[in-house]
Image (spheres, rainbow, N blue to C red):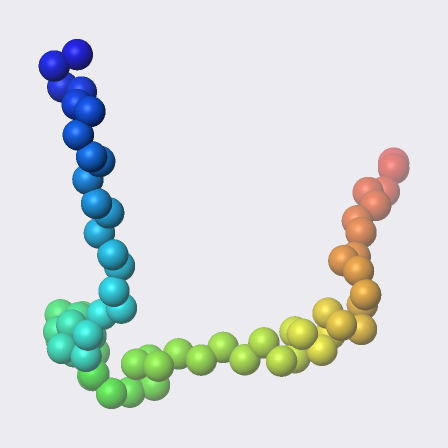
Length: 66
């Protein structure tokens, strides 16, 4: 019981986004250029959203009986 305390709990570390210097260093460590096609990955979900909107509900799977 000596390990327990009634003191205030530890504060949690706030997760900040990496700085430009940190991103450049990470790219250097991975041997990647700091500016290039992989520097800013953008995923466009517009096609998925349009298809999902037309479905109205998720498709169901019915297994075939042998």
